[in-house]
Image (tube, rainbow, N blue to C red; front, side, top):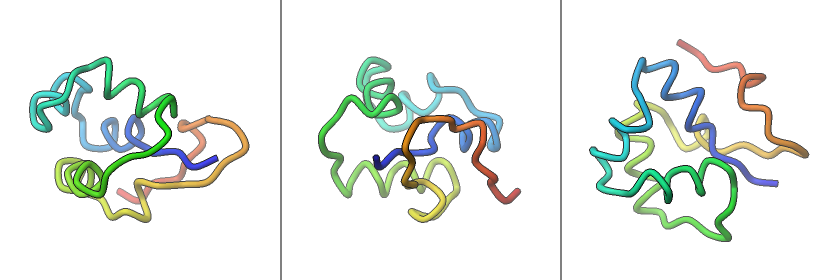
Length: 77
């Protein structure tokens, strides 16, 4: 399953989901759906914006997993 490491990246940057929603102009409901993997697709526009605001690369943002445990991701500081 493809997942996005949004929460660990927010934590690394000391930012909140609220802050990210404001920057990206999306609702908290839609952001939470993306975080939970409740979406079937995501546009390159969102991937680019996530990387911009979370100060990361697509390789740090996107990962494959059998289950969702973002706290287990090892992110560089």
